[in-house]
Length: 318
Image (cartoon, rainbow, N blue to C red):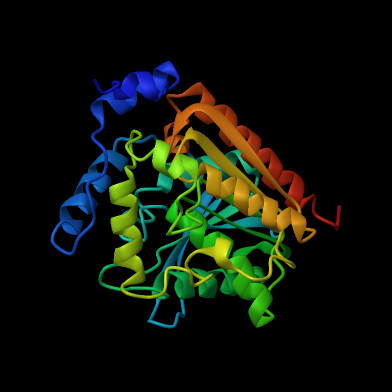
């Protein structure tokens, strides 16, 4: 007899109640993606949107045309630290709008201006479109720091899920291309290995929120036939882990990617880098979005924002 999901994945009570009424994401196909996007948009519309000091919309020149970005300012100032943020959604769903509440909250808790990037989505735009858009936006933030009122020496990269994949890979890309030196990476449950067979990938294959079958469909939609071992797709296959920004990975206990997170951290540390994994017990993929309803999510977000704030440091002008 199969063991019920609720007994195999013992979530904290508040998150368990939420997951009990949210069906797992379906597999992404060209035929299903529009309906999945509509569902995600509807769910995100119910999330809180805390007040911020100010916000501004810009369009960044990109390799495939203009890239919309939205900047959330937690306070007035002309030398604020900044976090360039890539939303999750398997490279195929979600948007600036779906992650508006989370980005506002990160801005308020961290004291950073958060620059949320509307990168191109699969299956309409496949690898490396999303990555090139995110990297272009991150480089633009550094180049246009005076326009944005941020400190070019205190710009970090971040994201959740597929967005955290983009943020992680952008660190390699900046190193490889001689681009900006980013101050930090905040990576929430990143996708790091499209071909992972590590124990958690199997044990958590039908965990709440994100099933392995859905995750694989998202990788395939984004990769569109590209080699899944390409390190700009799956950074765990990189040959060189030196020269990356310091990082924090937020890893839910019941996530497909948690073993990959530890494997990635080991490689970065072996190469002399600084990286930490924050494992959050009783949680599952996507849990940070429920910071307003789940104490463990709020605590983890606090920890992540403190780490970000500590990494970008105070304004050197005093």
